Each structure stands twice: as structure tokens, then as C-alpha cells.
Image 1 (cartoon, rainbow, N blue to C red):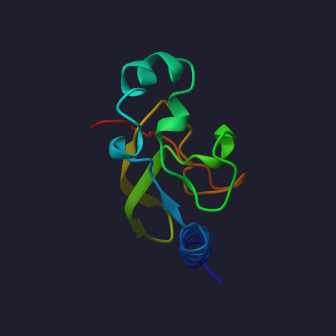
Image 2 (image 1 turned 60 degrees about the horizontal axis):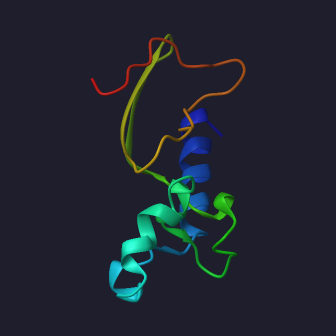
Length: 110
């Protein structure tokens, strides 16, 4: 199985196994809306969509970075990839590759 096939299967399995939804502003009672930003000041992750059926209060259950299509152009001597992400709060974004084939010359926002 090629590296490209492994990456595709990994991404497909990971994203298909997560059922997520965000808490809507309309779900917050009117009396509590003025307090919402104060309560969430240090918990920006809690504003991101979370894994359905998981504990809402656990920040690890919130997904704050969502990938789009991954484009890979590979040959025998090199490979290039491009991917856009929707990042809602500062997050770690996984890159394709492994210990032997780690990406170099990665750019962000450009």
C-alpha cells in the first residue's frame, strides 16, 4: 500500500467516525447571553464543534480545525501537497508524512 493510499484511508476513517455539531447561539438563553463571552474567555475550544455523545466540557472533544480536500502530486523523487483548513482557534494541524518522509518548506496562508 502506497503512502498516498495510507494517508487517504487514515483521513477517510478519521473523519467518517466523528459526528460533530456546534452549539448554536439560539440555544443560549437570552438571560445568559451577556455572560457568554466572559464565561468562555479562557475556553475558546468550547466554542468549536464537539464530538457527538462525548463530554462537552472536555476540551479534547472539541474539533477546532477542519481540513478541506488534500491534493498530492507525487513522483519517484518528490511529492508536493496542498490543503486548506478552517481553523477556529489556534490549533495543531497534522501534516502528511512520517518519520522518514517528513514535509519540508511548508507555508501557511500562502
